[in-house]
Length: 163
Image (cartoon, rainbow, N blue to C red; front, side, top):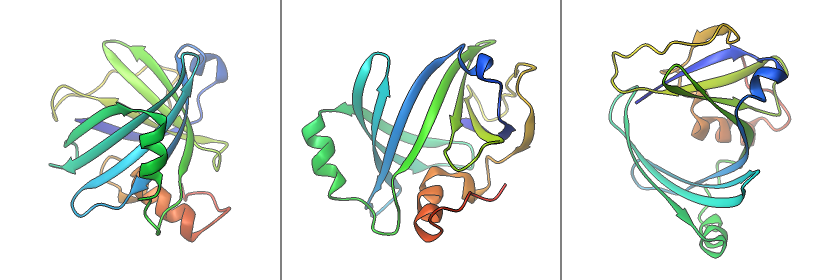
């Protein structure tokens, strides 16, 4: 269960309070739901993650996620969706008031980022720090789902995602 917000780009000092992950995520062909693989580079090294998601509601999805080895990751890249490109982003993971804030910074934006917050229920409202300036909630907006960002970037190379 998560909410997603379009936010103004936070100050670098605030982002530095959390873990920094460099992520390349590739969407794979799927008959139902979506599948992806990620290469995640952090101070702790590089890991590879496979995820399969099944949407339950606008806020909730079932998710199977597991770490895989590099060989499996490279093999799965052969199943990449032809209508998409890999999405590259930097994710900052910042704990705040019992929540984990995940701020995704994309190379095509200089002034905005996306904040995801995992919740305990669909009715939960996260407490956000004053350093976060919300432009609007985008939880239900299809364009801000990473699978659609991957399609947008394929169809509009070099263009920023509309704000």
